[in-house]
Image 1: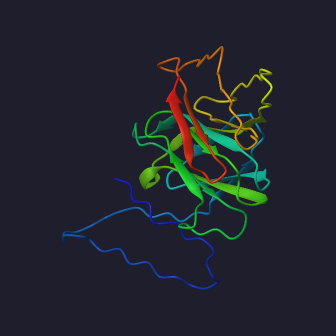
Image 2: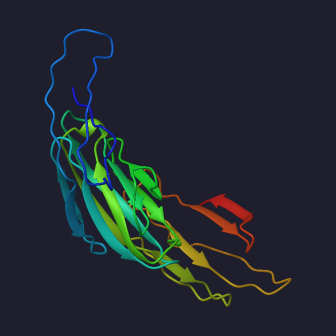
Length: 216
């Protein structure tokens, strides 16, 4: 049985006390270990990084982003002991981080998952903390994918876009004049590895209101 205590980050210097109490009585026994977070590498765009976690370990990865940039995080090849426990990846904005001030997160839940990060809120170094529930040992692969973005001209010129990882969104834009009538078409749709060759498309106006939404 494993029990991972909420992360103890940004501690002040000094001596701390730990009290362990049996929840419903009885005579308890356990092993305890205290260790620092593992400082992993900075992620390189579109290059998978493997994270190996021992008992109770959390590994920190980083990437550099700029405000408004779009990227995606793919988390795959998960393996835990015992099996099927999943892996968390929490994303923290540049600056001092605490266990609860994460920007967003993704949980593998036994299968690969992609976290789309459009329009990053700040420039600087983003930190990822990779951990398993309860601190069980595990392995996972994390890939920082370059964003798929573009601006469509309204003259009928076709533009091609290719995602860099499964589950990644594409974020496109266009400019219209008042009263202009336009038609948007996707062609040559190919979703490799998906259960269906299908995409969803949403068009929003400058105020963020959806004006079109369809599955293709």
